[in-house]
Length: 275
Image (tube, rainbow, N blue to C red; front, side, top):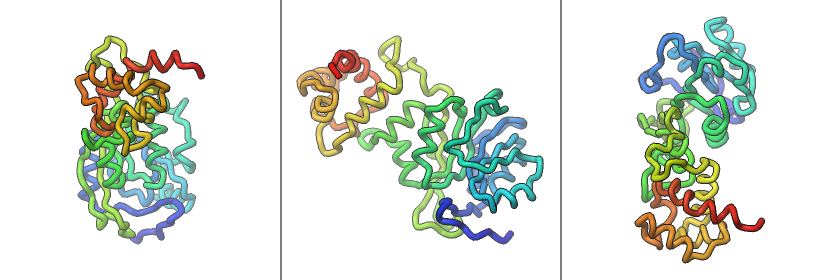
């Protein structure tokens, strides 16, 4: 098949390696009749594999030139939408009513915004299997002492796993970076069963504390938190020591559970701070 010319404005790089497509399908664990949302179907290589796996596909494509070709190829086999995935709403669709998975080789220029939308906005998918930059995949799935704000946010909402690295040669045109497939399972992500407390703090509160903690990577955590939460360094150090953490620790060395518990300790103090 002759590939269409990729447009930089849409962040287009066509996935051409069928073995990589197969890895995405295996990771997705699609059941016949299951609803799948695909963002940026492009030439339809992954779309075809999703259809062959029995998925009921809703594909959102921003490039009108590709929409016409996809319509000719798939007809009524998929629900094809011309639009912006970041502004499209699933409310009132079959995907909202029946639940869905998000499976996509996403345009890398919208990765952060897409993750934020589908991790935090209802209706959420039960699973996301995404092609992202390898560097982003490593950050999403990082463990202490290599955590980042992205790691904390993604791991608060989902169980995150890197499925496979993908070389640049799997795409046309060949990008300057390597990629990776990541899987994020959201079904149990907000559970507080592993928390020390019977009631876990709201995820928004945990993220707010984590943002403060990562505000200056060169500084120790107690400096960042005391500055942003209007607490003394001593108060923060006492909280860290209560978790058996080094009071000189930096944000990248905390686990997600550490952030959850630390928020439980510090949030009541934060809430009483005059605005």
